[in-house]
Length: 572
View 1: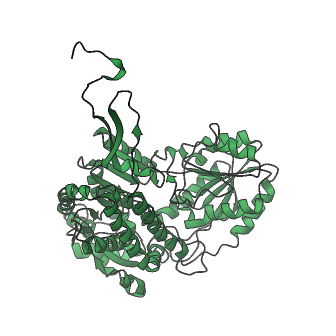
View 2: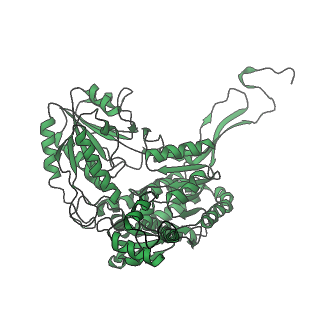
View 3: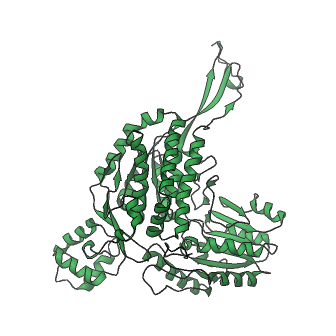
């Protein structure tokens, strides 16, 4: 029966590009004794599969891996099959998932998932390492992070090319993402020598009042497919210098990047004799490994990057146990173009913001609010710019827009456009799925009313809304009326507009820019947003405080015992 099912599936669904694990296939084959008997009609099989939690599977036996076509993978230590759990040593005993190239739909290589026992081995290692690592002086912890940054520098190009290959963003952006991890390592190294708490004047004689910062404990980090390197760095580099032990789960669809980054970090830790468990990694689906992380009461903080709907559930579960969260969720970002703006500057910034990473950044430009007096001119310039964007292989230096990451994203693109048209939107440019292998679509420009229901929903694809407005007050209101609050920008040369925009009655986002686009944030500032974006902050500024616990310490260095607020307690 198993052979019958495999043959039927390979012949009928070989074009499907969903990742498959052996456990899924085995589970499906075992079910052949009941629902999936060899005599069952294919239509019945299809109906049964649609009811399952996964849409399509395909057998690994019918696939030829292409990892040998990319020499840089060998440089990173990637083979046909790779372990998916690191707890100080490499291990894994679960089923395999296959990574696919979104530009071709072809399988690259496989990673073995972590099992429940593998996960527990990571937590045990973290427990064993926590006290020793927490007692290491912060500058010495910073030295380890410095070495991690240097090791990443050695692999800057091949790791950036892997990001392009597996995620689909262009090579320049992939390399830039690795550089972002390197940069955050540099920031963390400096921070390790200047973590400080306030010294506060005491109202009592011979008393000192001060803040003391200590490690928080065991930290969980779940990152998304679109920034499979950088967001790990934002969290892990800071958490390491703060003295925590860490477990990381990257997206299953970018499991090769997760393996490569963990291998680089593990080499540094092992070379320095760092206790196993200071950094651990597990690979696996969100419904299994992810659920373990979300529900694990031993983790004092969970950092999650992903959708608003899942983030809301993460928040409910973790906060029920009084754990901490850092949530980086949806964005529905807008740029405002005032009539006094440098229009060429606005168009160039907006083109990258909307088209970069094929519209799959949290900070991608979704809504371009254009003053009615310059609307037609700016719209024409944007359309002209879109026509010049080369779409293709993300590893080709000439490409400016690669594929969408998955076939599901292509469906989101087509279904989103259908809803846009039904709600009165007018497609000014693009709107088509490209007839070629891979998940390629045209970057699309739409004119639509700001209050169309679809505008409030973030479509994680390259669809840009052009929306006219009359006054700055109206533009601010439109910017703020969506549920998300990540990034925003205004293009203007008028200082009155600038300070209205960044002031208390201006943009309600976490990132509020002037004369730059919504995407491409630097690591020195705190990154995150408000409302349904989650409220978390990562990367720079004082984001490190989320990875530590603060104690307010009152020290009496005298012989008397005065009470605060002048309270007298009898003759004591």
